[in-house]
Image 1 (tube, rainbow, N blue to C red):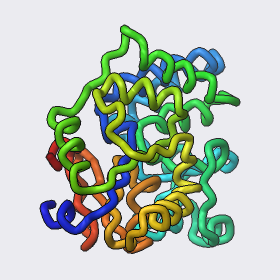
Image 2: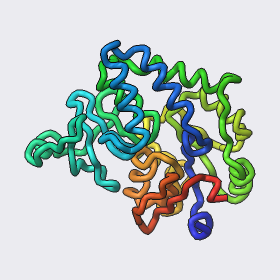
Image 3: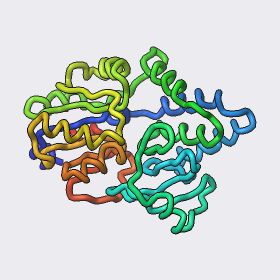
Length: 273
């Protein structure tokens, strides 16, 4: 860890799930989506979501979900190529069918090809499978709820002080899919207002991650190996960084046994400080 902080010059942080923790907002999102699930599917939606959270469902963080095919895709962690496809019930597609449909690099979006990189996408996938057409209004409602008195953010001990110290000698930027209003409110709540010298909002990760990394490397005049990407979403922030020769800090409380020379896995950002 010390070596990464010593050799890194530009640190690129994610926001949701990285600078704050907790899962209550995901459950709130699921309950809002439940309103739009057809009556006959509501119980199945809830059952599937609970299974996902327990890790007992084919839909898991780190996979992808093809909405049109209603298919769950297992990806190679670095190349993100599709190595296995399952239907909703967990049955595996024949290799021939998988290779026919998924022989090219996936193009992720927020409608049809979903990178299940964090807890936001579990209720989304369940809702899509069970007949919800548009999930975005309920996502907006959840974001609005997160800046009310009813919702309590969980600042991570040591992170505010740690980032301030890191900023003394390094460049630190924030790249998030959240929009500018959400980001401003969340950073104030986390006592991180003004800590980042550059913020990219509505980043459209992972589809725009490569492009954003390239712009940051050029803007800050650093080499890829001097950049450290920090986040809890392997598909959005970690795999693209490793592909470019950058370093990465992956936040996962389960600390998966995955090794890469340029990768550090921690259970919380607080571990870094």
